[in-house]
Length: 389
Ligand code: NZQ
Ligand code: ZN
Image 1 (cartoon, rainbow, N blue to C red):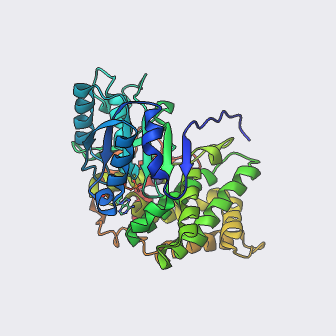
Image 2 (tube, rainbow, N blue to C red):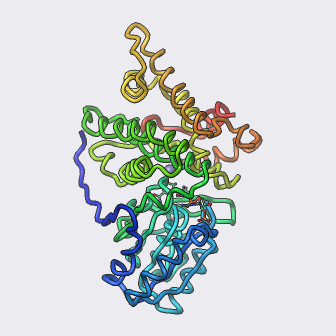
Image 3 (cartoon, protein in one colour):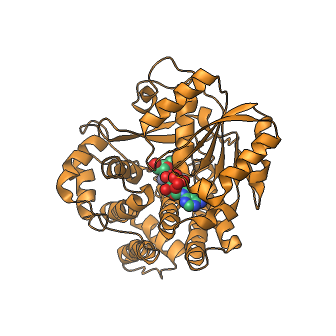
């Protein structure tokens, strides 16, 4: 196990009707907020009205900015920065999923910065300060509700890039599983793939002797595998919704990555897919991850066999552990298919003609290697995308 420091300061307020606490909780930090949300699901579900009522009764003023799109765009971030500066708004409250939350985080680092906020996503600087951010989460998926990351798409060049800094972990996040009952089936499934991916990015490591965090990752994956089909069969099943929601947060709050290096190659490759083709992040991962696994599994067959055995209950073939490993990958792919996700680029309606361009962008013109478990150059990224066709 590697040395590590772990601190996750996001206060989680979990359970039925907890969104009613948003006003009093926000008031502890600010009297005025920017209220940020997406394309309208929060209005349709009634969440917006309940949040506004709670803010008003706690005496918190707000200015609202809606219209955050999935794969959130830089232009709206810039609009939010201007609003906060003009109105001297010191706090940002996102209600929605990863896209609204990541936009809030980008605005938070952009407001106190004299330069262009894209500098932080383009590796041209790191923020030194940020406005506080809080969330009311409506979809278990990205884990942004307690992560130190924000992922934004720059429309110029179709560049989807991330920023990671402790400054942007939300101060509090409200998680009411009831709010996820209105999710379309496809979004629930995409969220499940993203959660699985956050666990697998940490699971496939070169760090030796990490049995405790292996077991935590395996337990969290098994929770998703058991409960997502339940949620899809019975959308109103609170208990199953609660399991998925909490697992989604724990999968990406950094606890499960303590003492081990993560991979993150599949995420880097997927960001090129959503950057150009605007596909849902989870759907892109359902396509990329199995292809990545087929490409790298010989690097550590024992680890892939462990994944197959412990997570998917595959009987270990001691004479041919490679067969066990391959069966584990097939079970993952089968799981994605049963919950209605694509597992090929073709199913995502993505042709193979821009694979070279995506591999080039992903590796910054073949100047960097992506991933840690196996370091991938431009050709390797292209080969993985070709396997995914
Ligand atoms: O926009 P609205 O109308 O709200 O609809 C959303 C959106 O269309 C809808 N939705 C969300 N909650 C709903 C609902 N519809 C009905 N009922 C509800 N309760 O779902 C759609 C997807 O929303 P979005 O916020 O885009 O989903 P998600 O949470 O999956 O976020 C995806 C983004 O997060 C980034 C991804 O790259 C992607 O851009 N990620 C952020 C990370 C982080 N900050 O730590 C890590 C992740 O790996 C990921 O990269
Ligand atoms: Zn993800």
